[in-house]
Image (cartoon, rainbow, N blue to C red; front, side, top):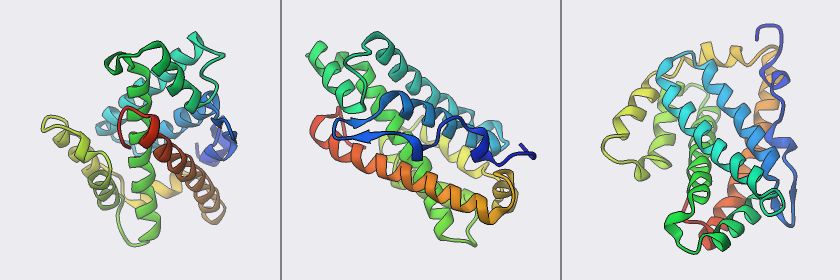
Length: 202
C-alpha cells in the first residue's frame, strides 16, 4: 500500500460506474462497493469487521441475484423491479432488502467521510459517530447500536488514516473527493428510486 495510492489499487471506482436512463449498472456498482469495503481495512481495527461483513454480505446477495437473472438485473432499478415481479410477497424479496441495507451502509460511510472532509480539525471517530447517528442508527435495534458505537470509537486518527491512502496527499485528496462525490450521486439517485419502488427508505 505504501508503494501505490489506494485509488490506484482498486479495480473499480464509483466514478467509473455507468449510469444511464435505465439506471445504475449493477455489476460495476457491486465491484466499486467491494473496493469501498477495503477502506475500512485501512482503519486497522478489528472492530470494523462488523461493518465490513455487513457490506460484503449484502453485496454477495446482489451479485447472486444478478448471476441468476442476468437479463433482468443489469441495473439496480431493473433488479428491484424483477425481484418485485417474481416475489409478489414483499417478505420474500431478500435481494431488495439486501440492496437496501447495502445502500444504507454506503450512505453511512459516505456521510462519515463527507463530515470529516468538511471539518479539517475533526477526528474520524467524531465524524463517523455523527454519520452513524444521521443514517444507520434509526434502523438498528438496541442490540446492534452498541456494536456500531464501539466501532466508531475505534476509528484511527485522521493524521494516521489519510496518509494510508497514499502520497502526495494533494493528489490523493482530489481522487477521494471525486470518488466520494460519485458515490453520493449514486446514493441520491437510489434514494429517490427507493421512495417509489424500494422495500423501505434509505
